Every structure is written in C-alpha cells, then in structure tokens.
Length: 317
Image 1: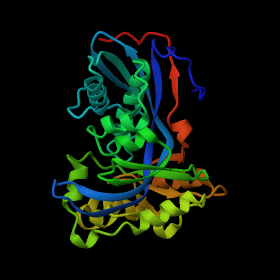
Image 2: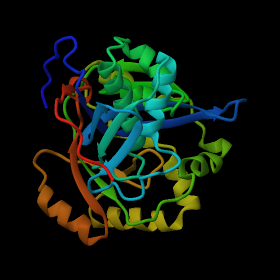
Image 3: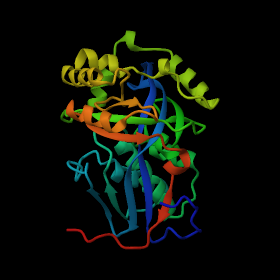
Image 4: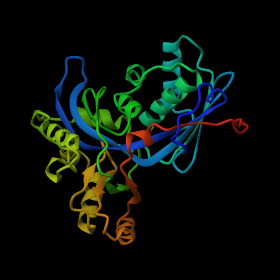
C-alpha cells in the first residue's frame, strides 16, 4: 500500500485504510471514577498485524466481513465499523451511505483492539472519501463515542493515553520491536473487558509509575525497560480466570517466561530478540495450544496509510 499522499479528490471513488492491532506495553488503572468508568494510564503501540478496510460510496450503510477472523461478526450488535460510520455521519450532518468491506486478520476478542481499530479506519477513510479535511484531534473526539481505544488508533504509532484512554499524547516512533502474539484456545466471553474491570480490587490500583517511566524512556528514543512492561489485568486473570491462567502458565513453561497480557486478554505477547530462532518458538507454542502470530511494532506513518481505490465492491447477496 502506498504511503504517498493522494491528490485532492482522488479518494472520491473509494478508499483503502489500514487498521492495525495494538499492544499495551504498560496498562495501569488509577481508580474508579464517579461516572462508573476507570481512569487508566497506558502506553500503547500499533502492530503490523492489520485488518484491511475498504470503503466505497453506496446507497445505504452496508458492512461485510471476510478473512480468517471474520466468523461471528456479521450482524453483530456491537459492529464497531458500522458504528464508526454512523457517528462520523452524524457529526458531519450527512447520511452514513457507504459500503465497507473489512478483511479480518486480527483475532477477536483478544485484547488486540481489532474492533476499535476497524472503527478508527472507517472514520479516517470516510473523512477522506467525503473530503471533510478534519484534523486528527477532531476525528478522535468523534471516535471516543465509539470506544476508549478509538482515539489512539486515529493517531496511530506509539502513544501515552490517559483518562478512559481517550486522551492521547503521541510519542515518537521508537526502534522496531519484534514480538510473538499467542492466542489461547478459549471461547469468547460476554462483556469480557467489563468483567475484568469489575473484578479489580483497590490493591490493583497504581499511580501510573510504569506508564510514566516507559513514556519518558520512549520519548528519549530508548527501548522500553522490561521492569515497566506491566498489565494490571494479569493479576485479575490469575484470581478469576482459571482456564486462561492455565494456558498462560503452559506458554511460560514452554519458553515464554516474560509473557504479558494484551489489553484485557486473552491474547498475550512476548518480545523476541532478532537473533531468536522464531521458527522453533512458533512450533513450540503451537504445540502448547496457541495460535502464534509473529508481528512487529508499526510506525505512525504506516499505521495511518490511506490509498485510493477505483474499482467497485464485489456483488453482495
């Protein structure tokens, strides 16, 4: 996909957008708010594991999911791609008439942010398709009504996020990190993230020290320190999700002692040195029952790519 800017009006026929996955390198919860949400302090980065989102003008809103992880998304009541189109249309004062095709490569629900990223890609792509010319901050404000991670994906790259996650401080691109994402064979849990937050205890709350140190280190161009790779939900999982805990313990025993949860899980990641024998590691973790995805951190420019497409969508039923 090209990273060159398109000429004005060149998106009128159709747009292709990247929708990358993410990992939280640090994820802390500071406390519960009066509105029922929680204040968080997190450092996130986009990955080169991406969904492909294509949009064309249409006479109604229509969303199609294809690809290896599309199962169960058609007609889902929390279709975030459709929701992204609806909220942007409402903000722009127009009808959400667009055909959207999402090729799903990001497992879900896994804690990798795939649904929120799809919504952000739709918002960015529709802004180009409709020629809105809105800045990222305005699009992020619209996206916050879809989900707390959507503003992060509007900005892409590496970022320090606070509040519910909707306050985004973009950080400089850092040295590329290589990692393996391990997805355990557990079924989807209803309202998984809400359950994780509900299971938090006062002793789980921190002051943002891991995220702050990590953000400062990244801002200086240094790699993240291992001691600040932290996820509050790991403690929650250990005491409330025996099935997932058993899978993660098996992966650690198989050769991933420094394994960290992706968001609220169930996927987890481990950083891998360039000299590591990844083929052997992949085989080992597959034998332990995981879906194994090799990925790398994705820089901001690549995470925000848009490309014009001028062919019509495939026929629908």
